[in-house]
Length: 247
Image (cartoon, one colour):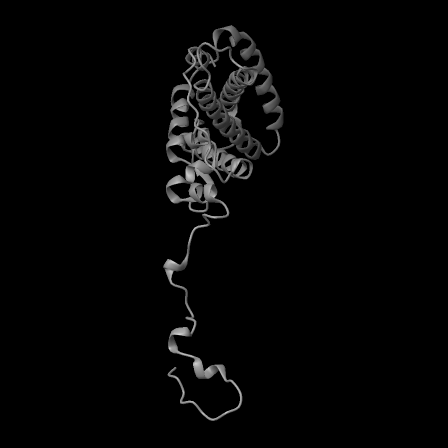
């Protein structure tokens, strides 16, 4: 407010010096906000919208993206890439070298399933089909992970132990997935459910997405950092395609 006319007083009154320019606004203008560039300049750079991906290790960006909350979430393209393995494997058989053992194991699973179907067949059947769906999601996701991991190993290097273990898991999951698929197909008439049994691609895709969502939350908690991650570059392993074809 305007300066008041001076009065003959023997004390100092600060309000006599107040002006409109000195009054504090009730709102803060947008240009008053500034990034934290002094306390953590590298962190501020990494948190910029165009650098959000650098909050995490580069290899995670193959399957995930960073949302507005700086959290990982599945990339739709990753689900599509994983489902291409379903399209090539869903009606495949086990390798010839294990076909005899597979037939014997299938008979055992069918026998055990039929014993469980004597009471509340629909519930048993639904649970078995759900297990089949999630197992197929794990199987094709393992193929996808194995291919990605193999690409990070140079051709001249020996396969590390962890990658050999992942390859064996991929093979074992393929065996289990086909075992469940074929046993469901054989026992479906006794489930007491309408229709015919087929692996449902949409259900498997949803299970793949659920798996990626869980892993996104886990990796967000484990790997989130405030500085740019190092890039990863390597040559593809020549044995990858052979292992995937034989799983």
